[in-house]
Amino acid sequence: MGKGRVVVERIEKKISRQVTFSKRRSGLLKKGFELSMICDVVVALIIFSSRGKLHQYSTNE
Image (cartoon, rainbow, N blue to C red; front, side, top):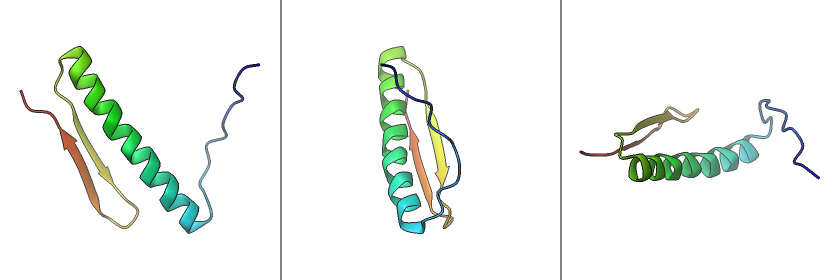
């Protein structure tokens, strides 16, 4: 059995939306780090939360 499709839509519950954002943000930062290490590339991630808070990650050469 394969995985089902995930419906991409806005999460209405504010707390659930914040928890999902936090988990996905950390996943994106991890993937950026892995991509920079494996492929020897420069990566820059800029993420703004719904509250306007800035989260950033970049690699140095």
